[in-house]
Image 1 (cartoon, rainbow, N blue to C red):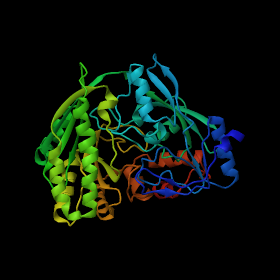
Image 2 (image 1 turned 180 degrees about the horizontal axis):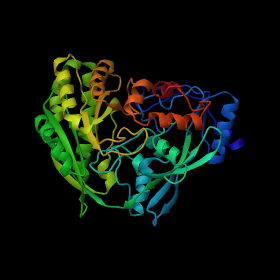
Image 3 (image 1 turned 135 degrees about the vertical axis):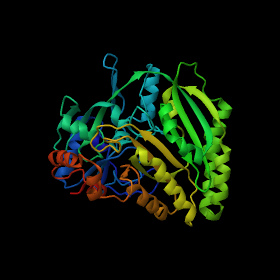
Image 4 (image 1 turned 90 degrees about the horizontal axis):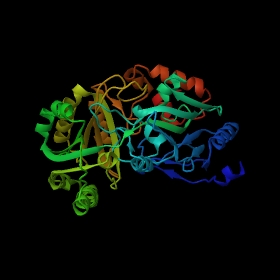
Length: 440
């Protein structure tokens, strides 16, 4: 254990958005499952709680602790690619970006993914990270097995055939059941996606929403508040050939407009809120229609350099348009100035215990504000609308729901807490966030 505790530090931790801060007693970077088990044993002896942390892309305090913070930077790499089972087993601290790059080099791909790939595989799956899909669900829904170190130091291997009750819960485990050390994903032969990005009016998108979802494997759109303008994106499999964005045109769209100029607009809007409606009109007209074809991770994901805070709710898919129209009407009649687009995506139903899409086809409505902008009034107003439609908040994004509300929103909430009681009866992995959302 000398090597492990040579990698022990004490420092302040902040998440990506800067809205969550933690001051752990110590920060530890174990290099093996055995070292991790010893870290948990020592923390328990010292009366300290433990939280693993990824890259900090969650906006909630799900990973915050004043005890022992585990950084998984030494638990990385590909354990196995099984071409017979068509799976890849990866260490929990591996960034999705690295996983995607390795898979593409091996001629393989995940079926679906979110729109950024900076997170670790354990961080992304534990909070329910998702993209958009008519038939293909979240990253967690692509898990075929996982390895979990429990509070007692036991290494559990979980799948549908082994510790199945833990597997059902731990695919989105919120860091409440143990420390995930490896994840096995289903993969498929690499394919090409053709992306079609196109401006569209709010009225047309909402009128044709069901048709757009039905006709495309992956459909999403962004509405720019204070305007009637949206930008849509349709991703569908293609026979090829590959036709990626041009070097210059891609830089203009993805870096100059979506990041550089947008960063300036956000900074101006934060300093002078009265300019936001005019800036929104300019921003909504700046992006032009384009099509391109590439390997999946290069189409699904985009660079996100403008930092923000976010709240997202999953609704029954049939409620999405009505709820979004309510959000638009609320913004228009309020003094709010919203400089960030509202994002709308979809997912099929799945069977993961605390998945936001558990048991129902879902639509996601995500609202954002530039980092440092007061968000409470806007997010509170939107949350009031979302909960009116039996909304389920994203576990890694800002919300105010508690265990009482969530127990009513999730049919198997009690099954999750029962697994937690069995695996972590002394609450080694507890923190304030988990006490609020799961009870204690």
